[in-house]
Amino acid sequence: MPLSGRVALVTGASQGIGRTCALRLAKDGATVVAAARNQEKLDELVHEITTAGGKATAFALDVCDEDQVKATVKAIVSTPQFGKIDILVNNAGITRDQLVMRMKRADWDAVLQTNLTSAYLCIQSVIPSMLKQRYGRIVNITSVFGQMGQAGQANYSASKAGLIGLTMAIAREVGSRNITCNAVAPGFIETAMTAVLSDDFKQTAVKQIPLGRVGSPDDVAGAVAFLASDDASYITGHVLSVNGGMLMG
Image (tube, rainbow, N blue to C red; front, side, top):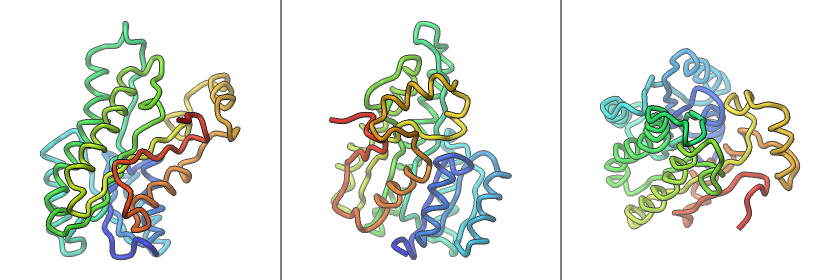
């Protein structure tokens, strides 16, 4: 178990990629702190992890609320059961798609706040304890559309591109203290967020993927687990693309 003894905080853990990342980190031996707004789904996740012999607990958290973020991190670090945060996975994210000429300011603000500002808040809150222990693994979930853009997703693409810049800035700031900060950029992944898309859209998307298939949350979770492990101790400021070859270069 490569993550045995580690404590991992995963945001947006109630469903999709975040949930699968939590399951994978627990399978690899980490004690998982699952955070999201939906307490019921979090409880189901914790039950699944503990039933399989893993360790996990849940915190209801709105990552856009600075006070809640600070209080949650403080509670984790000060609780003997955890006592620290070794791994932070910033996964929480939303979409509010619309052409930019019709996009409402509220939809722009909501996406930037949830997808980008929340990552800054969480990183800022966990950094002090990571600096003290001289160890940390920060993994930000960005997107292929933060690398190549997407029509109708100016807010989403901007937030995910910003997350890449944030990743590199943090990597430079804290690298000397044995803290790495990397990003995983999923491509077209089969989740609840993509399930609502039309079959025509999905078929068109698959044609753009050299591997000829849509990705799964497990594909992303594997990349996250790697970057969170000591196998990736000499990797920082990197964006690991998990997109089936959709974007190369």
